[in-house]
Length: 122
Image 1: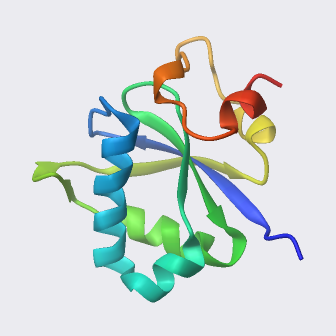
Image 2 (image 1 turned 180 degrees about the vertical axis):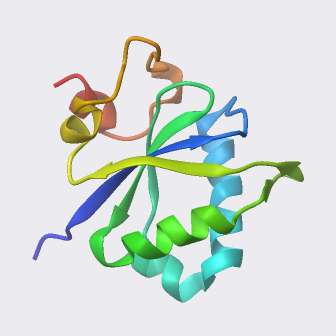
């Protein structure tokens, strides 16, 4: 059976220089907020970094609400103050980007993680 997932477009006040190190730090904070059991049910994956403060994260459908709540509770990453704001959520990246103004934002190819680079060009 296929796992249903949701994509979340998130804006942060934290400056994302490197997607992989940012996601490691974010994972540590998520585990502290929701615990290991809920973390495994959420199964978050950083899919795409659009610029230095907007990214797309993928999560399981059943843990999606937990992820949104946990992101709102995170106040610091790497001892730097930050905040996360949910812009939009959707079942596909294409639908997520449909009404999002991409003229002001550019996709950073070096920050792309996984298969999302192919999906975002559709």
